[in-house]
Length: 403
Image (cartoon, rainbow, N blue to C red; front, side, top):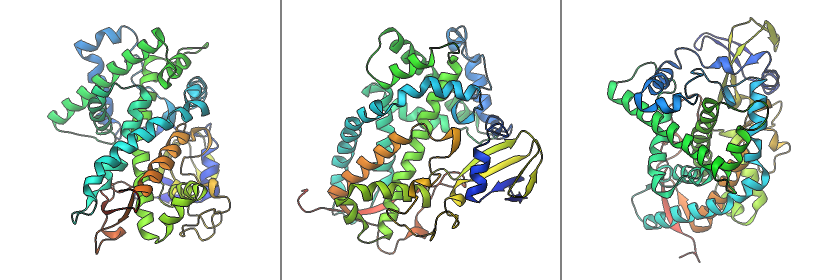
């Protein structure tokens, strides 16, 4: 726990200290973690969309009424508690189990497409062909996106992420960001209206009913912000989880064979990947009051960066922290899905996607990195906050009996 000049922030590295910060939302705020500079372009995109003439019918219904909306991972109690309570039925165990057939169907289609790369000397990028489209298409099915709109949905997913952390962009790029924002917000407003008027046995009906019920229903801005987090977090983090799992398998000969025959080992592999190579590495907080963590005094208003990746390799909590060990004692104690009130609401869906996706991939293929290639030559996402391969070239071989 110390002040870091490069980040101009207090950084929290130890597992005990990270938990101490994350279990005190009344002291360490999430809603203030969206700094002005970091939100510059994103806020401009929202403001432009709200002022657009073709969005004024939504504005009349409350769209844009709260331009600095805080929802989900960016919200503090008591509003966070209200939001989480209202949307929790959409993530019930029964509902998550119902997604299994969608995951199986999407995985089968992607693997059928991958078959044409089997035995080729030219490697195939597993991020582009498998780890990215799997969660994207699964989320489209979960959210009830019509098949003919999946390409639009994929474009929105990319477009909504582009302004995050940007302080300036070119005019053409800005116009595209606004277009994605407007199309996304209108589409999901209409989808919420449809499910309220014509309920179905699906996720979006659970979400729409829950969000608009009770004494403190969510605003339209809150609902759209939460759906946006489902889309971005659910796609980006699961993509990186799958990519990191596959990369670790290339580094541990024989491990894939073990996962093929032992479902418990596969589940442990998910946890060890989240601990060793977690997609989300850092969370940002702001101190609301003078406090002390790890013997270090933190003044009110100070920025605090919580490094989940460091905490997950704290040898006081995880002996031999840099080793991949299946069935590690206390292996579920990692913070790959976060900790405290902001523990990932979609964790069960992400785990199910990894269980099904990796199992089906390993049933069909043996795979290796191209000759002479290792982790140091893999191109990772250029971010200290998110961690996963940007590309993962691989050579595929058909498994015996699967031809």
